[in-house]
Length: 377
Ligand SMILES: O=C(O)C(=O)C[C@@H](O)[C@H](O)[C@H](O)COP(=O)(O)O
Image (cartoon, rainbow, N blue to C red; front, side, top):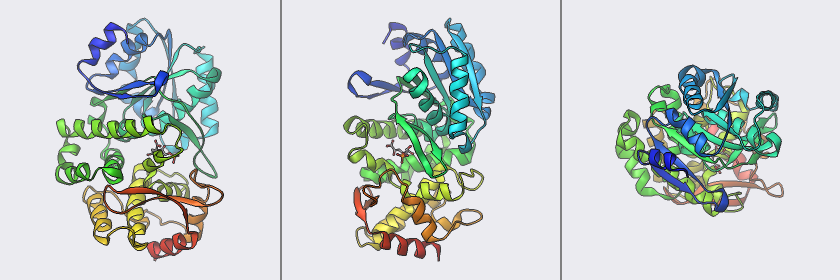
């Protein structure tokens, strides 16, 4: 890293992601968007193609463009509509076209400015542009800061399911600017909190217990929020460093996602009814209830998980989704498209208790169906 960028890092918390020659840093702190020009320059770019959405552009694009041009970089922007519907092949084509029109070259940078949708879309665009251009992730939502901007999963949705078209493309740097969370709508913040709680539920019961005690401070901002973000990034970085391409225990990060993605697909990614983090909250509560129903986890742990998520205002049942969802067989059909399916067999992340999650392969579809029926009754 160049000296100027190293000096700037002193003010931010730095979480390394160790992946050999593709290693990078996650910087967590205030005022990082204003440093995007210096950071991009330190990465050796001449041009930067910013990809963002209409809402984030209104809130943050001017200061990012100013920072890039002040650093002497040639900056352009592609702005997409906000919401999950932008994670489509059609939108990908317009983003790639915009980046090509701006003549973003191989040694330049794509800067993903936004939440999970923008990060996944822009990251995927960077992975295919001229067969691979580097990407700087500048996540502006809690969900993107603690999860989707880290680890290199990029992609778009298909009519067959969520994130079914994509690539692993690690970012070159992640700038998680705490200032961006100050103006995040409460529903978005809460949805991102589901992914924070996930890290405790996977393998860190002490972190989950701390969240149970201190969630109000996390919502309020200040050091407890920064601690929660940094702890989440450290947890994710460790898993990604062990298993970058999800051959093994990276699948643990999918806790709640098999049910959650099926619900998102079922409502056709209608964010007015269900956003991703809400789907994950319902999915995690279901994964614990399913684990209890299978006799794997104590009923009290399932109840405890549901109670905490509900306490912060997250939905915990598919019946809470406005407009309702399809029947159990249809939901099971969505799950059969999950990327963790192997030889047609369903894989779930189940738990033996809080902080004791594991990957369960070859889960009996009849048992899943019966469980879904009970959840919808
Ligand atoms: O990074 C991972 O690995 C995850 O599974 C994190 C998830 O929270 C994230 O939503 C991810 O994009 C889902 O991945 P998918 O492979 O199930 O599409």
